[in-house]
Length: 120
Image (cartoon, rainbow, N blue to C red):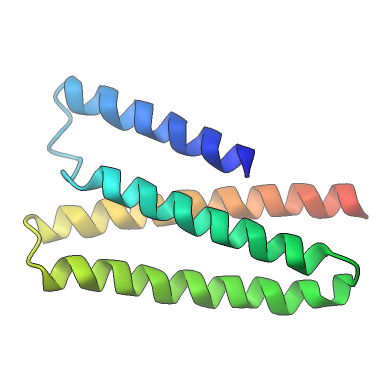
């Protein structure tokens, strides 16, 4: 969980600095909500992976598939909620959300593959 906190803190610093130095046209005003959402999702995935790694490693694949499905459903609910509320700058919101989705997915795969290599 510590790497996810570090990555989120780094992203928050980068976004804050970018917002202060004129790159706000690339950042949606709700970027803070998106970061909190993805940190929460990372925590959920981390907890599920710990359960999947315990005792019986045969449970790992079903738990990993469950995290993929859970991430997808929760992301659709998150985006749907903001679109339903009538968020301004829909294209920018979705672009920023997808960029963060790709970043956190790649980061999760990196951390997971590192843990799998160490565990074998």
